[in-house]
Image (cartoon, rainbow, N blue to C red):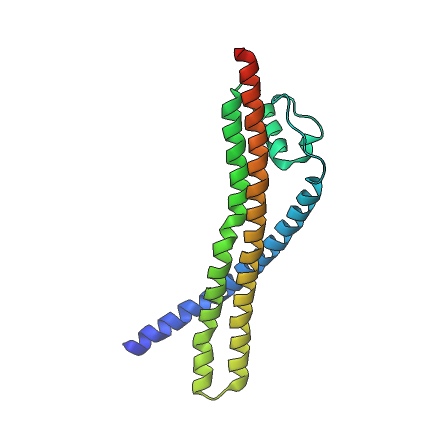
Length: 187
């Protein structure tokens, strides 16, 4: 009975190896693509800062910022909505973009760990039959998976940290413009 359980676990974990490896490859590709997008956005954010005067009509200079672009998109989608609702919708859209990247901060290393542990079972069996070639093949996959998972996680952590800082500043700019407009209307 115990041997049957061991064989079943071995088959199931063996079936999980390829989906894990494919997800790791996707994760590293996604993180590198996102890194490229972040570098482009970093370049676009260069320049002299400018204060938003009219929240309903940001200047072309401010539209280089992704957070302001998202704000303008929300304005276009529902121009009659109160500005604070549009602010919250903009914040939610920016958070969604960050969350898509943040998932890989934990998911990448978790997949890397799974990709490490799955081939270790087969590697231990190779030691039992004194097959060093099979052992080295399984260990290469195991340690390569760890590296891919950690790399994807670290890259996505750097990206999400930058995005949180940038979009926080964009939202503060929008918030200040709304407050200034309300003050003018109340005086």
